[in-house]
Image (cartoon, rainbow, N blue to C red):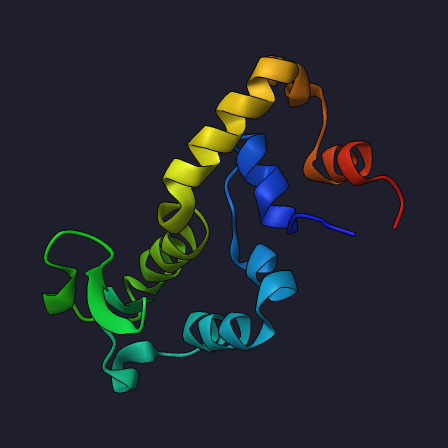
Length: 129
C-alpha cells in the first residue's frame, strides 16, 4: 500500500510544517534539531546552510542569502530550525508538489479541502490502515 507522510497533507492544506512533523519522518534528524532548540548551538559551529546531495554530488545550499557566513546562535536558532524544516519538506519538492496539486485540483477543487485537517485528509485519501 502507498501512503504519504503527514507533512505532505499539511502541504496540501497550505499549513506550516513544524518540528513535530519531523519526528514522524526522520527521528534522528528530529533529535538533532531538538538538541539545537534545547541547547546553545554556538559550540556546534553551524551556519545557515546545509549539505545537499544530488546524484552522488554534495553541494552546499544556503538557507537564506549569505547563509554560509551567518552562524547559528542562541538568538537565531529558531529561525534556523524553521528554515531547515522548510528546506527539508518544502523547497526540495516545490515543483513536484505544484504539479501534484495542479493534477489533484483538476479532480477535486482544492478550496474544498480546507474543511479538513491533515489527519482527516489522510483518512479520506488512504482510509484506515
